[in-house]
Amino acid sequence: MSHNVKFQYKYLDNGCASGHICIGSHNFEFLCSYLLNNPLEELLNAVYQIVPNLASFPRKKIDFIMLDEPIEYRWEFELIDERNVTLTIYVKGDDLKTERIFINKCQLNDLLKALVHGIERDAELRSNENIEQIYKQFKLYLKVTKINQGTE
Image (tube, rainbow, N blue to C red):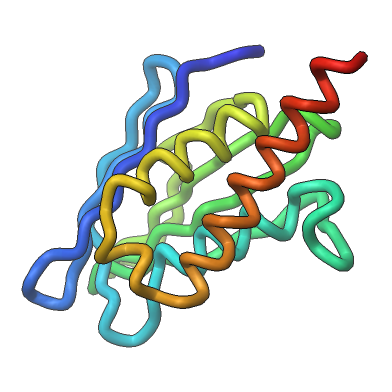
């Protein structure tokens, strides 16, 4: 289930951010508002909650809402096993209908690598203390996982 995972996120000048996530051949591009909250921080917190040995009380499934008025995207992460995760994204428009627009599975480490890579290229993203902290924990987790896999 190894997929090529890519992630990009960039702040825009108008209180919005843009980005995309690509798992294999499935790509999701988005715009979102960061006036009321920081969607990147919420995305990282959600992923953090499903990573074994990181969160105090890890979860198997978690979601968060990313707003792009009047649209909202619900990102849902579900841990399949210790190494694999499913990402499902739903959209709800001003008609209040919810539709699944993205679903794919990948290795958890591939997702973490993509997030780390997408964040490390942009000092502005890491200027948020909470994002920087989670970024560092993901990097350490990946390093320890690589070392442990090398000794198996």
